[in-house]
Length: 243
Image (tube, rainbow, N blue to C red; front, side, top):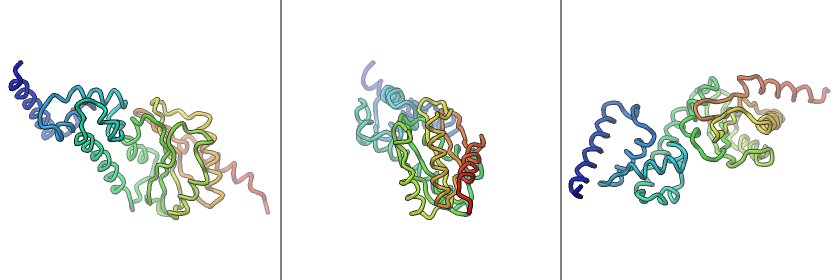
């Protein structure tokens, strides 16, 4: 196929993608097609299916691709600095939109609300990330903070740092959230111990822990919904000395 014909074919494909988006948004786009569509914004010509597919395969999904470091994105042939900037920008805009949507509102009334808020940001991350949602007395979001990353064990999650962050923001209650890159949200024994220790440390400072949610591929686990937060709180209160 001649170069001119190839470029014309590529232009037609891009136009069809734009028409699909105008008609129904991203609903009918696969993750790979979303990345390809975004790459077209930074590259006027050329077939971008291959770099889009490689990005999804290398990083493990759409969310992980959008949140990947720019220097890692540019390692993929066909994704230049400008392309990588677009991908990173979309991720950061989405994160700010979600944060602004709930800040100052009594938004978190259930574990499902938290899951819906963070699902698209955290589901495809290749490393475990521990996030803390800091809430006011009216259950309004003050801030959300990524505090720890990597393999989460008792030695990797520091209650002192979490409490310091809560006191700094004058938070009345906390929700802990982390992801399982395996996709299975079932808690480990370490997850149970971390949740108990954080619940106790928070209660000692007069701060309430509302939940600890683990996000998997398309589902989640809630320590509050399963009664564990209540059990840990009761256990702490029973251990307090009686005066």
